[in-house]
Length: 111
Length: 115
Image (cartoon, rainbow over the protein chains, first blue to last red):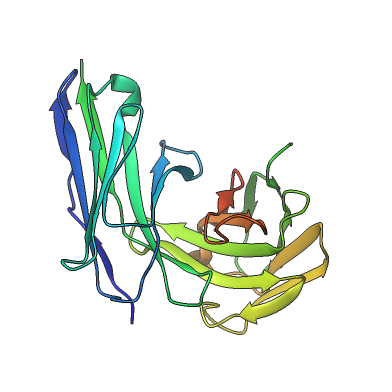
């Protein structure tokens, strides 16, 4: 059974700070990893995907992947109140297009 | 593109009634997924289709739930009879060929309340 665990939060950071969101997974064969953002009452929105060990940067967002340690993280630099949302980590299985989602970390950016 | 379309957006029904949720995937997408989201259990995959064929329905909670995809542009999720514990937000998502197939795009969801 594939497990995806996220730090439970909620996580509160002041505006302008770096928010760090973490995710660990149990399936060693997973090759791709996703971060979804979900605003309250809305649907999940894909914001980052990462396939290789190391860092991937997209604007203020950086995803970090360490397959040996089975964790993936999302850093949000210069956090804005508009970043306040629940962030979901998602991992597919080998040869499968199913995604297993973590329960999410709720982030609040305080002005 | 209009994105994934779901209807209705909200549904309130009484226990024992039949409920049908509808989904139109993004044109050209060949995978379609049905999810259920609750506070307690998070986002759970119920069933997914590839080229209109059900591939894995192991997440369907019980026989009261059924899903169909009669063509590439339409899918339904039916609950009969509905129970209060089915209250949740149901999402449909789709993904497309030529790109990493595990990048899924979600519809706005249907919020179901069973009283």
